Image (cartoon, rainbow, N blue to C red; front, side, top):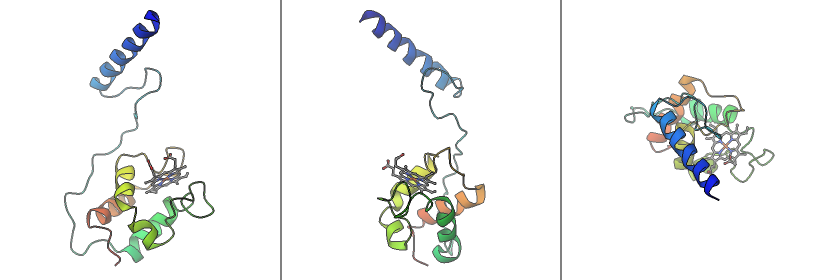
Length: 127
Ligand code: HEC
């Protein structure tokens, strides 16, 4: 009982230290240590990225393999504009925080990430 509490306290202290030191791996289940870029777009350019020409092909490559009726996460179906639009704030956050795509899956390139985030910031237009 006491020991467990102590171990827990140590673990928290250790992780706090690690976080302060800049996030080196350690401490049981480590915090996300991948260098997730802080690249949230500052605004929406004119014209915004095009859903049809730019955004949909990236989503098809990077998300739809899992997020489709035949994928592992079929509840979230990103195969249509509607399917994406109703979920885009969630998608934006998961992408920005480097939670999605999962680290085990192919990652978007820097340019792809920028296009998606910018389009989300623009309000996910059907253009
Ligand atoms: C390798 C398969 C895979 C790929 C690729 C993938 N996802 Fe996911 N996604 C999942 C699974 C499985 C879940 C449900 C479990 C979870 O949250 O980890 C999920 C959940 C989500 C959720 C809901 C999270 C929540 O907390 O409710 C969002 C939003 C999401 N994915 C967005 C995306 C976006 C955007 C992409 C592409 C940039 C993407 N995913 C690519 C497998 C994938």
